[in-house]
Amino acid sequence: MQLLGLIVAILAGGLYILDYFGIKPPRSGILSSGEARVKNWRFLVVSALLILNLLFAGVNWYERTQDIYRFDPQVKLETIRGRLFQNEVVDMDAKDFSDCTFRNVTLRYNGVAPTKLSFNHFQGNMQLTSDNPVVMITWALDKGLGMNSDMPMLDKNGHPIEGVRPPTKQQ
Image 1 (cartoon, helix red, strand yellow):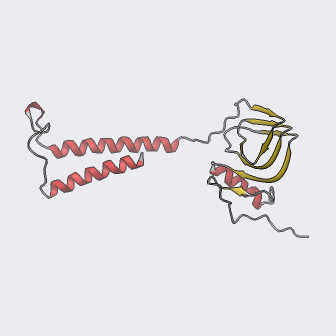
Image 2 (image 1 turned 180 degrees about the horizontal axis):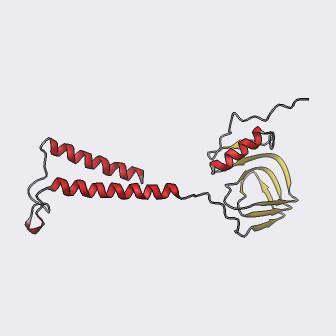
Image 3 (image 1 turned 90 degrees about the vertical axis):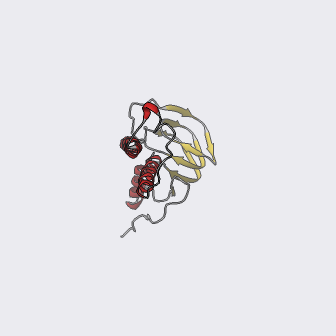
């Protein structure tokens, strides 16, 4: 949406520059024929482009104010029992895992719904990832405080997050 607004603004500016240098549309066509005659074509075109630009800006503002990661505590959890997850990415939102085995998996939690883990088995390498920056910052804070310090964290593109280290333990 931002791109469309930028294109409209560039068109409006370009038309104004063309008019400044005396370059005008041909005298034939809808802007000069019969009843649709418009004496000030610049005003009409620039006004239409301005209205479009304001419309795109409004849509962009609306989209930015919507929280795509809104937590819903009322969602019903899907129960998953006794399943083996191996060498895969496991989505955790709105899931209740019970007596499952997780072997060499990446756990993805976006924080849009609760999750529950009961009597599960974890084997091999495990990693955490999320598309939600708030969840990632929370995990980094936990790691910096010394919690979950052994589990690697991946960004939404699957790259390890560097620079977060657990505290050193002092005797």
